[in-house]
Amino acid sequence: MALYIVEADCISCGDCEPVCPTNSITEGAVVFKIDKKTCTECEGDFDVPQCVKVCPIDNCILPLEA
Amino acid sequence: MNSQATLSRELALRIGLAARALPDTDAKRLLSALTDCIGLPITEEKIAGLNLNSLKNASAGQFLNVDEPLLTHALSILKSGLNIPEQQAYIDGDMPGSVRIACASNDGINVDGHFGSCAQFMIYQVSADEARLIDIRHTGIPDDLDVEDKNVFRAELIQDCQVLYIASVGGPAAAKIVKLGIHPIKLPAINPIAEIVEQLQSVIAGTPPPWLAKVMGIEASDRFRFEREATG
Image 1: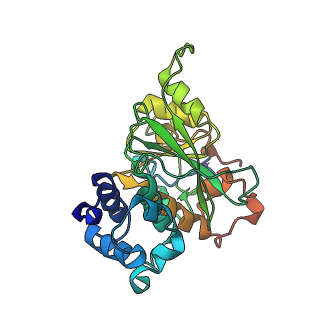
Image 2: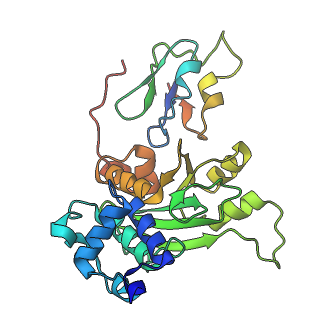
Image 3: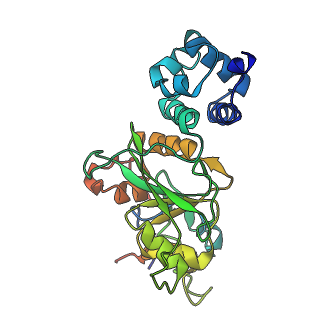
């Protein structure tokens, strides 16, 4: 389980990067991206995914379909 | 008569403001360029007859390298002062690959307005190689209109714009702007609209970020693709 950032919606504000408890978010060539291997959707750390909480755009960070 | 050679106060002010709109130009430089191109005394009539090319080629072409929108802007200040920037007609479809922006402004020249209190929104249609001031929307609420939320009224005023530039905006107001599908951009300092427009043009001409390409209506498949990075 992991989250991903919708490329067409991300505005590269960078707000999500510092709040990630597993440091899974980095700035990519186009927009920010989430490392699906390390993203835990914040389980064990927080009740809700922190990146989704701080993201200013609706539906920009979504769960990756398995 | 001596007064023939003196500049009217109003005209002198406009020359000063126009010089400020040009890069590395003070009033003295612009004044000498004007003297060179229309001769003394500088009068209202002669200024009115000035066009872009004559200004460009003044003093052996010293403004040749200045970007055209800046020169056009300076010329409009020379002719009519700060208050009445030149508006141009626009019909949908005129400028393919363009984006419509609103700039919160009090003076009509700079993005110096707070979203909730600015006097007007300057509406520009901007493409890679063209920019037109297509409308000026004043923010006064008509007497006969019962407005419940001032910020919603203001956001609806610029509903047709994809991007909004402001000097500042409050959080709840920003949410109302976003809700109408407008992308607000708060600038870190007060910038001339001409500069913002120019910056945007270079972004459009290059590789617009995906969100901008999306609001401009460029299909995802037509967007420039970066090589996919391996995410594992």
